[in-house]
Image (cartoon, rainbow over all chains, first blue to last red; front, side, top):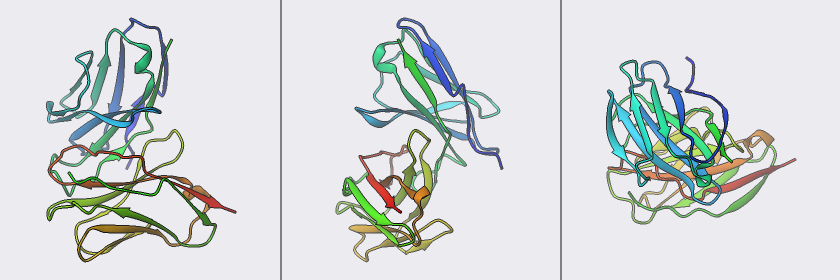
Length: 115
Length: 109
């Protein structure tokens, strides 16, 4: 079974631009979560989608948004990019939206650099 | 979800067992203990998780104390490729995984 795939793997943007990142979950997985990883803040949760609905959201400004399609693929968008948005953006998928006993599997991430 | 405490770093000789401790003294009855690892600049990799009983899979063993206040991840025969940051996460009602600082495990030749 193929793992979680993320595109693009690397991206360079300038301040003020917007960016869209894509995630394809493991086949059959319906839940997709997004995380941001920076050297200063570590791994932080952005949001989770299940069956095209946002189920949970982390503490990030409204510039960060996402969506999920009927085939469970997900995109996240960051508008008006700031230098501090430079990070590794990680997508994780899981089979269901059950809490507790429900492992998440991560993709390789998209490395975003904002100049 | 309960917080966890892990040592910031550990070394292990190649071929020996690596025992990574984690304290979670405030864990509640319905919270699971998860372990992930992250090799430099890659996505975190799921290793194992458990509730009360010890668990074993092809990668590792998870030993949870009877009072569930601490656990140990055991890599039975560490290799250089096991060098990574290991995260112990307690997860119950929260939908997301909350990552701490983890333990940097360095496997030495």
